[in-house]
Length: 212
Image (cartoon, rainbow, N blue to C red):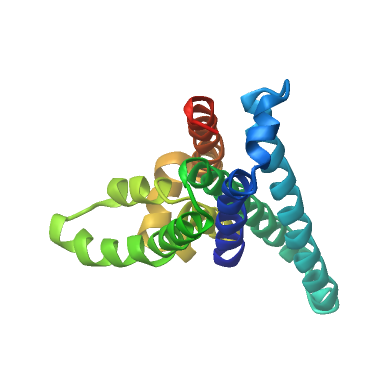
């Protein structure tokens, strides 16, 4: 989940700003093309390319492991593939949001890498340091997970592999007990949908009001 995430951030972060630096974006904006299309087109293109790469990688791994895998492993594998795709698409959306306000590719790339480190490592380290001090309970951990698309995708994949939540420890037990396995999965999927839609809306708003 971490590698597709950084790929999505970097690819998305360089699409619009590269077109702006090369003078392509002003030419496209002068055409009868809606601002929504200026965002939706790159988003769909980058997401599709990244999805093909992810599916190819998982497909090759599935072929190699098909001789030793059991039928019960198919469900968790599909959940992992779905979670990875969702995280990758969410990161593409966030990357496009970064690209929409960045003025140079260097700025966009550095911002995307910094954000990836914060999402992949920084938030976990902060939780380890802060959670005991402020007595953050399961509700606080759930909020932190929902605020991090990488973490939401990871928890979703682990929850699919262990519907009773035991692999996630007390936090997983809280999720299953409070919302049920299906309910917890729905909450996590909803958070990933939010992380896809919200950055795209922000990017569209920035592009509509920016000087090409």
